[in-house]
Image (cartoon, rainbow, N blue to C red; front, side, top):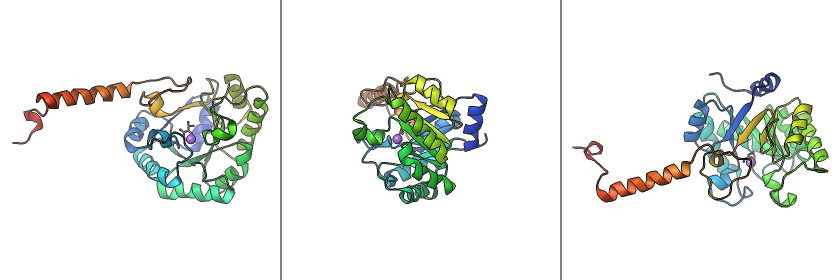
Length: 265
Ligand code: KIV
Ligand code: NA
C-alpha cells in the first residue's frame, strides 16, 4: 500500500472517509497496527504513563521519545508517524519548537510532529510548518497543562466554546494539517469540524469528527486502573498475558514445559 501523506488526511475529509489513529511506542505494535491499515501512529507522550510508569506526561523528555519514535517509524510501511513534542520542548517560542521538531525528523524519522495548544501555540506551529515539517495540532483538554486547566476536565463547554473555536481557527491559520480535539462535547466538535478545512481527530470528542484516535493500551485492555469514559476496549490483553504467564508457570512447575520438542538432542 502507498504511504499515507498529509494529502491523505485532506482527501479523507473531502471524501467523508474516517481517519484512524492509535498511539504506538515500539516496533511490535507499530508493525501490527500498520498491517491492519491504521492510518497514523502517534508516538504520544502518553509513553510517560504507558512505557515509563510516570503518573503524568509532564516529566517526559525529547531524549526519551526519540528512540521510541525511531522504532515506530522504522517498522511501518504505510502508516503516517507523528511524534508528540513533550512538555518543555516548544513553549519558549518558535525557535525552540523548530529545534525540537527537527530532532524528531532527523534523529527519529518521524513524518510529522504534534504539539498542544491553540492560540498560544500559533507562532510555534507556523515556524515548524514553514520549515517543511507537518504539524498536527492538539486542542481541548491538553494533558501537559493539566495544572493550568485545573484537572482532567472537559473543555469547550458553555463559555469555553468560543475559546475552543478560536483555538481551532488559530491552528488552521498557523498551517496545521490536522487537529486533535480531546475531551470536547460532541456538538462543539461537530461545529469545529464543519468550520475548519483541515481534518479533526477525536479523542473523546464524539462521532462527528473526521477521524478517531485512541491510546492503544487503553483500547487493548492493558492500562492498569481507570480508563476514560470515551474509550471502548477492543481486547483484554492484560487478561491474556496474565493467563499465559500463569499457564507457563504451572507447566514449568509440573514439568510439562519444556517437552522433548522444545529441547535439543
Ligand atoms: O500522548 C497521547 O497519547 C496523546 C493523545 C491522547 C492525543 O496526545
Ligand atoms: Na500527548
